Image (tube, rainbow, N blue to C red; front, top):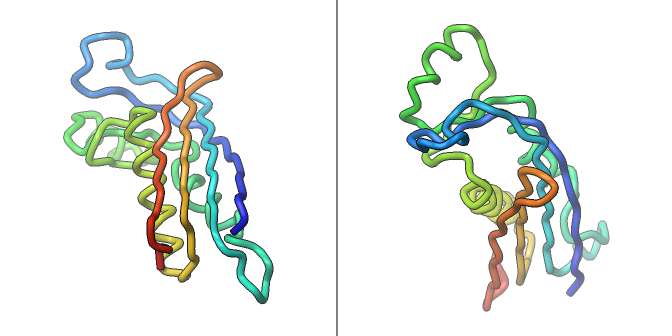
Length: 141
């Protein structure tokens, strides 16, 4: 088993639809995502996973506006050709950590990469973050 980690930054706007406070207004962050994986390296290539595969998942959010599916801003932004990611939940650190973990887990499964641990931390700034941490009793296939 080897443990690997990587980080990737992206810039994106969002708002917490339904939040009566300042986070209910459209605003942006310089987000950062940290990923830690524990798994068995491929015997031919020698790595657990190609970091590019993780970066591709995170890069889908770069320079876009992240909105919940029922946010009324979706229609006017779409009409003006703005780049959106429409989510089933608000784009909080907590929700994004789970979303990235789900997508990374799915990607690993399609490539038959065996892992025993996954942790995804999402930072919305230098002092606020949330993480999703998963342990696998059986090797994920």
